[in-house]
Image (cartoon, rainbow, N blue to C red; front, side, top):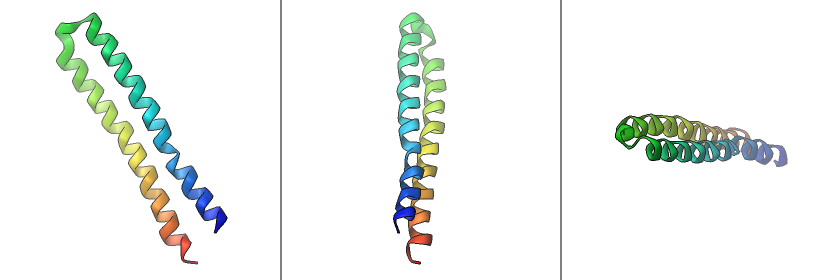
Length: 75
């Protein structure tokens, strides 16, 4: 049972990478908007797309962790 929990914990760690990525993207977008306020709409759109893709990675990791627990936890 310990190795199952460890595997699920490693799968959930993808959320940490997504959090760092979203933070960096937001910081860079804020800097870009400060430099070019007229491009705010384009910058925001690109940032949101990047955040969605990073968040999807975290959700996939969470789903994999749940599958590990559900499928292997009952054995």
